[in-house]
Amino acid sequence: MNNFIYIFIFLFISNISFANNIEILSNIPGDGIKIEEHYKITVNYRGFLENGIEFDSSFKRNQPFIFQIGLRQVIPGWEIGLKDIRIGGKRKIKIPPNLAYGKNGVGDLIPPNSTLIFEIEIIDAIPPGYKKVFPYQLLNKKKDGFKIIDIRTLEEREETGTIKGSLQMTAFDNKGNFNSEFIKFFEKKIKPKDHVIFVSKTGDISSILANGFVEQLGKKNIYTLVGGIDKCCLLYTSPSPRDGLLSRMPSSA
Image 1 (tube, rainbow, N blue to C red):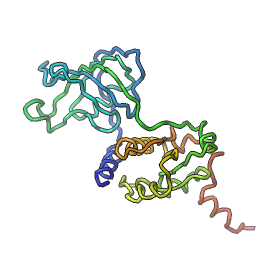
Image 2 (cartoon, helix red, strand yellow):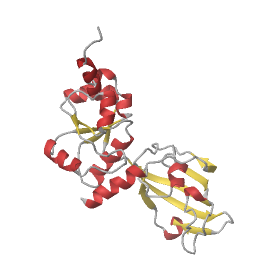
Image 3 (spheres, rainbow, N blue to C red):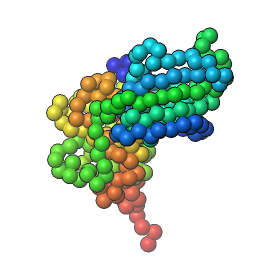
Image 4 (cartoon, rainbow, N blue to C red):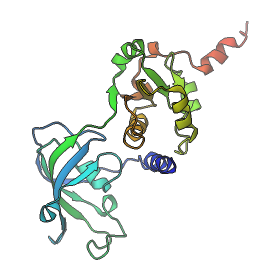
């Protein structure tokens, strides 16, 4: 449980944007499925310093590398540099130090503040274990008995209102700390065979949470609302508690 919480705190506070100053030196897009967030991908690669010295190669080890996109399992330069690539694609990218190993480097292999060049080939990709629900599908999913958990903060829910019939439980506070009560809430409210849709503001945090529930806790039938509440039709939502307060205020007449 503690490891699970730690992972989520790390992922939440690490969900930051980097300036996209990756240089693509060559690109063969590939004709397989497009790699998306949280796909588990298998790659072969070679890594070079700017002077051409090779410091790492999965080819030489005869051992492809497997990682999951969007979970900070690789340097940020890889996350950015592999965007929109497909299975079968090959890409050569140049990564500045701030998106690689920075001022620390890696022992004797990579000096501090090194710009790196990688040749990466996408061998295979597996979609994440959670599923996606688009806003236009939401009403039908509700009719089918899907449970909806709004994981936003109270302030966010007051701002927009909530989806009618949804459960509300904050998963992360405004500082990115994971709410340890969330898992207890989930176990209390959700039966093993229930289908559950996590809803966040934009869909980013709910997808991270959904992935964690599948990968770390072994849960099944977990979904995320694509685009979050920001893309959800207001017709689906109940009035904001803030609106309710306003409606109870006496008129000035």
